[in-house]
Figure 1 (cartoon, rainbow, N blue to C red):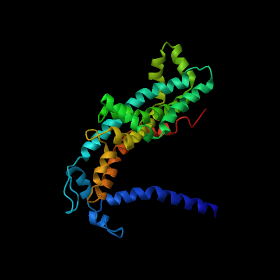
Figure 2: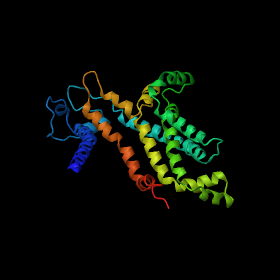
Figure 3: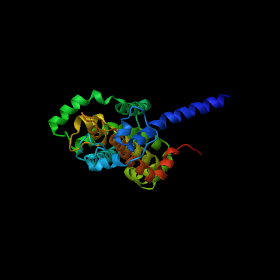
Figure 4: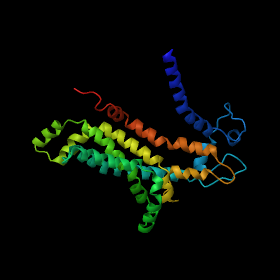
Length: 283
């Protein structure tokens, strides 16, 4: 009997996770009349109007005029900013994580304190720094620039990359690196040619998750971004108009915005599976 309740709880959790995704997808293939119906419609005639509207500006209803289709630009902005932020975070975070795992400190607790302090920046509330961040960016001319958003996303990327990469580097035996050093390789050559290839599965997982976190970021893009650099997260606010909310197009934008993460996951699938099991088997 106890297993019945376990299965029931598991089924409830699955439904709790899957239903929002199902409902979002159904909204993206409904017409405006079905979406705004007083009684939710589970049986309806599917339409691709909302997806076309992302690129043509059609609203799917005669009561609302067509708008300028800015979604392709928002999508491209998101790719540039999230991709650049992920690349920079990996380039900075991986060496930092390696130093934290191999450097010698007078007190062993210093290593853990540094790692946890860096990770705490990732947990900090974004709203706490938005006002001073805006003022700084305003003074140095980084508002509404790709560089400005890529730099601010390092508050998300670098702490996460350091913490995740550190756990993978710790699983690599030090003896392998010592053998490389004995053979005449420098510390940098050991890191680049020995450590990174051994940890590439875990690093692939880290890069994918960092990209997703940057892609989904909303507050930073809203505060220091603008019309030129607006990504999908803030650009989707354009579907909220004073006449009505374009739920269909907003849902379609959510579905389409999930495509980059899915493509990356498929391309890195082999490395992701290896990274998720890295260090789980010893001996």
